[in-house]
Image (cartoon, rainbow, N blue to C red; front, top):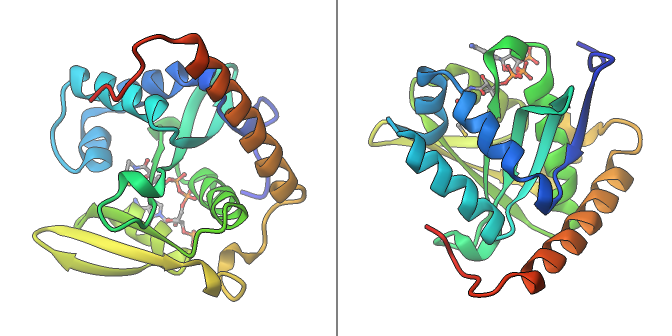
Length: 200
Ligand SMILES: CC(C)(COP(=O)(O)OP(=O)(O)OC[C@H]1O[C@@H](n2cnc3c(N)ncnc32)[C@H](O)[C@@H]1OP(=O)(O)O)[C@@H](O)C(=O)NCCC(=O)NCCS
């Protein structure tokens, strides 16, 4: 697919839009949810996970169609990861898969990460998750397997040679603008809340 459907767009969610991430993750069918979270999860887990993404400032680049998030690329903050390498994760609803949306989200996420000065990214996926492994490979991830899981690192300094070196027109500017909007909304929300803290 060369472009998105006319009613679809890719953008970074503001803090106030983060409930759309929760709705998207809850809509994933059971196998997709298992693939996304590396095991069975119930709705309360997804609720807590989405709340934590809001609380810890996870950047969510979303594919939005008619006001619904149908795909998401998550860029987690480095300080939420054990080794300080930001974690990334992807989910695209079954109805819009294999149309290149995961690839567009990946490309935008890399632009966002580069804009933030990150050196590398980490992705974890199930050994049998062919779709995610194909997507990760496409963007230069080197995956290693252990205990049924593949963990991959993407070296952002190598991205100039990788597929992702061809961001769509205006992607960098859009990512930077969206990031600023997110930060503004986030701080507004933060200062407006009392007793704020990690939720899960
Ligand atoms: C992984 C996922 C995000 C891919 O989204 P998508 O929008 O279908 O991805 P794309 O259409 O951009 O495809 C990306 C590449 O992967 C390949 N691919 C996609 N689905 C595949 C599958 N089921 N088997 C093999 N390859 C597949 C495509 O052929 C494409 O390669 P190409 O550009 O060379 O043709 C989606 O399948 C998903 O949400 N899965 C459930 C959640 C999940 O597993 N998340 C990963 C844990 S972080």
